[in-house]
Image (cartoon, rainbow, N blue to C red; front, side):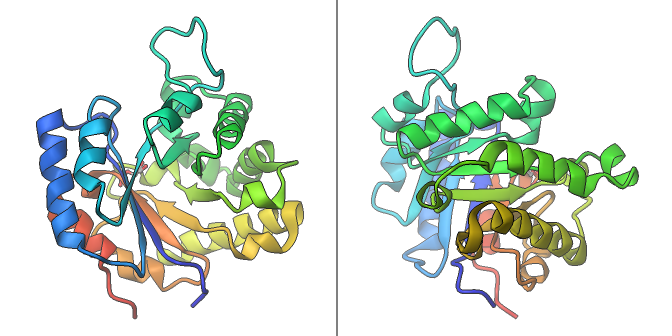
Length: 253
Ligand code: 13P
């Protein structure tokens, strides 16, 4: 067991009307209560963000956004800046989710700029990395996640590093029901922590690395037994209060 506090986060992706989001957030607040041994966050859509913030104001659950633009203001139709997220009291932002990379053309360079934008306004981030099935089968997992991590994190200060959480989300495990085994996840997390150590020294021992990809109430405990797994970034199973609360309250082995 490390002394890193477990961090469980729910990425709601493009799901939930405001009414549904409020219902989910209320259910979660009730189910999670005053849990302080674990950090908890949810990432609703932007349309539901203010309502979810209202509901969770007095709870232990933090509220974040799923992406941001890297510029402060300007002619970028449809986009929202890190400054704007900060302005509405957002606690966190996700950067570099594989769906953003694959479906919206986010390159390593764009991910880096988004991370810098979030750092500029001191908005804590979850930086997502992960390989596709083709990359894994070609034996390129380490090369790919090393490139993603180095591109995003090289040159940051230790103080900045301490505000960043990494999420290892193998693309082949997202939404497929094919969870990485605890051993596969541990291998990647250990490798990632080593890269962070090469870049930033001992702050690597404080950086939390979440696993994401088909995390469910019945597999979270097994994953969390592994020494370099510090939490989870959950998609589908974060969409109902019962299932996300069960993940948050996993029992330690
Ligand atoms: P699933 O839990 O639905 O596989 O999604 C994982 C994910 O992409 C979280 O960001």
